[in-house]
Image (cartoon, rainbow, N blue to C red; front, side, top):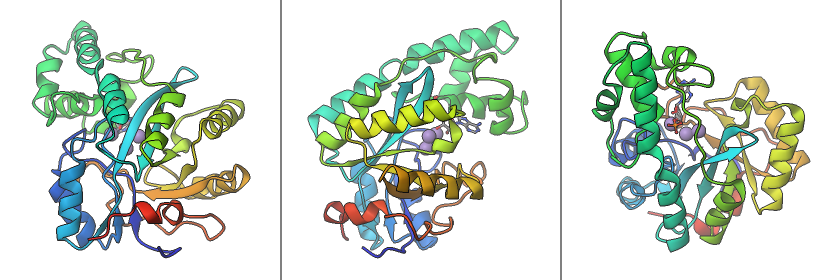
Length: 286
Ligand code: AMP
Ligand code: MN
Ligand code: MN
Ligand code: MN
């Protein structure tokens, strides 16, 4: 694996809260020049075999991927898993358990939205769901845009569905230790997704990375669609300080909603070690 290559190791299909099929995400990644791709749907590996087959047909190298929802310090943290065996029974069971509370949570979210005058949001969100096991806030956001409550999904997350706002429901996701264990146990590398998004204090962030490493986590996203240019630099420094591998991924969900397209981010800063160097033996070549 080259130190500099167009790797996109974070994006979503309609198997979770993206809008394109795994095949269409593969096709878009390939068209945009991606050389190494991973589909990382939320809490679900149901699209992995389709993604791999589509990548192979397009001549694109592939790494199995997932983005696991974790509760840490009263916040939701996302852990990306790369290069694991998507048929490993322990990760399949762990992800099934993690997905399990989503329908209940969605019904509670809808009840809360009904209290502020937005009825039938559960049924509305469901129209956007590709995988009934994976109803997410993104699907509610699309419905709230459809009915004109907000102009775009970002505005929805500012006014609704986030802590302290109507439609937010506290939820307990996987433990950090379990998420890392499932990924590492299935032969993969665990990566802290978009650390710049969590609004942690410096102490909380230090605790996250110390515990993550202690559990066997090895990587951090440095260049992601969720980071500013200043954050690329901040998290490259953190990768060096914590001796973590650096990852790169757009977090693409949809052609019109996502501000970062597949394969269009800048390269990783030269001082970090790319996660794909450690993952070379796990890459599935076409
Ligand atoms: P959930 O897993 O149901 O809590 O939904 C989380 C998803 O909501 C994330 O993966 C994003 O796709 C989306 N999301 C969260 N915050 C925002 C935001 N501020 N703007 C747009 N999408 C967001
Ligand atoms: Mn998402
Ligand atoms: Mn995420
Ligand atoms: Mn994501």
